[in-house]
Amino acid sequence: MKEYHLPQAPSRLSLRDALRVRSAAYPWNRAIGSGLATCLPILIGFLLGDIIHGFSAALGAFTFIYIGAETYKQRAKKLAAVALCLAAAMVLGSLLAPYMILLSIVAGIIGVIAFYVLNTLQLLIPGPMFFVLIFCMATGLPTDPHSAWERGLYVLLGGALSWLLAMSSWLWAKKSTDKQILIKSYRQLMAMLQSIGTPSFYQMQHLTVLTLKQADKIIYASKRQPSAFRLHELAADIFQTLTQLKNSTISADIRKPLEDQLNAVIEALEDAKGNWPAHSASEQPVIKMLQTELEEAYQLASQPKAESRIQVDTESSWNVLLNGISRTNITVRHALFYGLFIMIASLLAHWLGFNRPYWVPVACAAVLIGANTTLTIHRAIQRSLGTIVGTLIGGLILSLEPSGIYLILIVGLLQLSVELVIVRNYVFANMFIAPLVLVLVETMNPGNTVSYFVTARVVDTIVGSLIAIIAVLLLWRGIHTRFLPVILKETILRMQQLLRAIQAGEHEKKQTKKLLNSLLELRAAYERSLGDFSASQQRAEILWPAIMHAQHAGYLLMSLRKQKDKLTEGQYDAIQNQLGGVMTSLNSQQPIPIERYDELDVQQELNQLQAALAQLHSTQNIAKPAPN
Image (cartoon, rainbow, N blue to C red):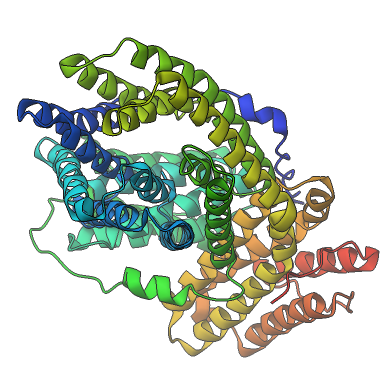
């Protein structure tokens, strides 16, 4: 086995990246759908002679932008829940508008709940800000608690229209969502196969895990064909087999047939005509296992699909949310932090007598979505610059006093532009968000001058952004770096639990899923820590070797399920002994004697992990654990 070097750690984030323009394809379908969802309620209101209530219904169009990569059943449930919650936010905002302290507290509570739910369920785009936005905008409308339910009803009607638009693509969708995600999974497996023996292997391995994790949500969402379930399970099996080949020297005469076989599977999934490529059976056990798995995948992908459906029991969203509540869960802490400063921003805006106080907590909520210190400052810069330019555009639009069809077209085009450019840079999005909000608010609450709206919008946005930056610098700076040792210990604990499950032959899938989640969270926490300031970044970077060895040891441990019958009791005990040594080293923060085992790949990886931790602790540079 040749020597394999860990990849270079990801580069740090810098403040100058705030203005970097990403190269991304324009999401035309999403943008056009969002524009229609926004302007159709206003058009209906205009035709019925009640354009003001049409604008109220247009607020429900934010429902549309919560669509994602999912089955139509998942989309129907999710968007219905979003529409109901947006309507509830409008009702609460209208009822609580006269009560400054109470509305500020409720704004914070909405922020906490929305942030925790969306992040725990991995619904990260577009995030929790729109629930706070609807609530706060309701407090800025003419005070009339008696109209709260009517306003909520119109928002709900707008959300229902967005639901219909989002679901309408089912009528002409040619490919099922599960087939698309299976094709994506096998293409990513191809990239992983091609990276074996190269420095890019670890990154390809990580991207493959993320793809398979996304596929889990779609494949197990509802009743599906047995072949789709088995193809997904085979993708996971192939991933584990490729993991065992991570630094093997694969000659071209072996690699090329494997690539041809995997490509045949992909073509079969895409309904392309092709034959299974001829190959010679390998004598190497791992290569032979991979060939067998690929051939089974090809047979399933190329055969006619059966009409039968099966249901797989999965953990409900409610249980996922309940199980995630923990003092050591960083998402819980981030949600509380998010809601706390939305409340503080609202209280300060009212106490200081801002003319439009609700824009301050909205700006704070938009900026605090940033996952770390640097990204929060990025969003503050992007929000402020974009809003300054956008308010000038909005002021120009309002000065022209558009009405009727022209006003409807402007709103639709602004929303379409937001969704088109937000993938490039948040600055560009805010250049269209600001005038869109100005047009909506001015139409629903007429009687003020254009300069009044423009000035209030710019000042309130800058103040809200500054509150968010101060909050992060005071209470959130370096939090991810401090949590890295905690997450690393939890990951090692999950490894111990999985090894015991494999040895006992019980609950293997359950423990594998828990370990996979811990490994992904460990990597995500490290990447978030790169956005902290210099001292925290340095403390995180010295943990990179330990994190990478732990991540790959975890994937190798998961692959032991496929050869558990070949392992001896002595090998199980040796691996548990290594994991216990790693846990002892993490708890004591002291180097401990390393007992080396070299028989299995996972043992060699754990040797490297123990050596990395010993080096860290001997220099006393490891970051302090986060407080419980």
